[in-house]
Image (cartoon, rainbow, N blue to C red; front, side, top):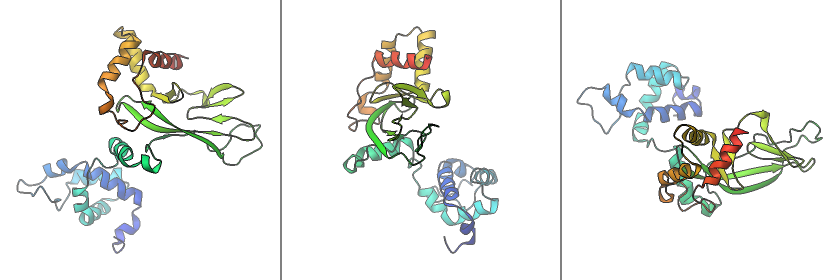
Length: 251
């Protein structure tokens, strides 16, 4: 690649985007080819509308797209489009990560790495950290094992969590905004989109909190979830979790 002048102008981010996007469009690329095109090798040319799409999506010129395809088309064609997906990353960490102290590729960090209190004299990076394994109840992937980190300012004593900080025993949400993820317990988190689904089911379908929890548990049995065999703190979702989430979002 280094000998090709086109690749001297393309960033790694652009190249990764090109491979990821083009690999997901293999059937569309084939559809525009003649009927005698081999299926196990990349076509020599991309259709014009595909060039236009990749050019726009990857911030590359049409000529750069054509040159990229010419050089790495076979790598794109053999690339497994599942690589890098949410499921692929989670399953890789489940299988290989725990022995290395890595249980998940997904983490819940505070949005800041330094104390943001105006009265705090320090502006240095927060160093005191606590880490714990948690379960995030998601709408699209079921219960997912994650690592949650919270940081503490050793000068003013404020604890910074993923979506709130604790000052003088009171919890404050950042910028007063409703976060995308709510903390239900020490080891339980939930996506707001899932909580909204429960609220709609309660208000429209007259479902009880118990039935909201039971439906979720039936949809995502432990052996089919991405936490299977890798979660110490994942148990069945309960009506108490649903009620707590309802209350937190309502407040």
